[in-house]
Length: 134
Image (cartoon, rainbow, N blue to C red; front, side):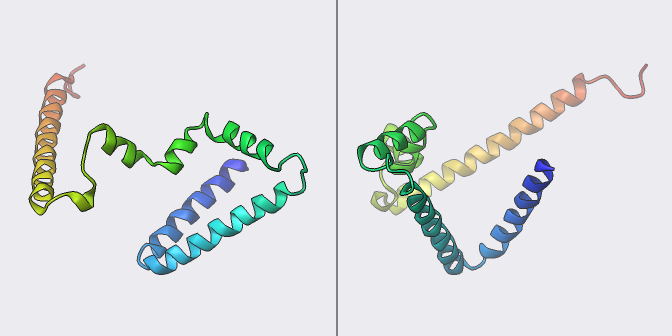
């Protein structure tokens, strides 16, 4: 029963996202409203518990988001961490030639991956026993 419900909402989410992706402003408005209303509900629910004020609330929040990795991911973001680690420039600070060079490099990588896939398929085809042999 639970799996059917999850599967239904998963398919429903996919269809809604597909339709809204063609209208980014409407998508942003609906998504933003949903996020604000969700956090408003969380805030108002927390008010029913007097212990969830001030420092205890901060500590409980950290206890929930630090082990899951959401603290760093949400407040800093993976892309910022990775770009700092790689010592990359921000997109706005890159020159046109740097961006074109990066696009060319990605195209070269895609071609290499295609060649590797072809080699692997050839190896698989040649090493697998023939289906007609017994």
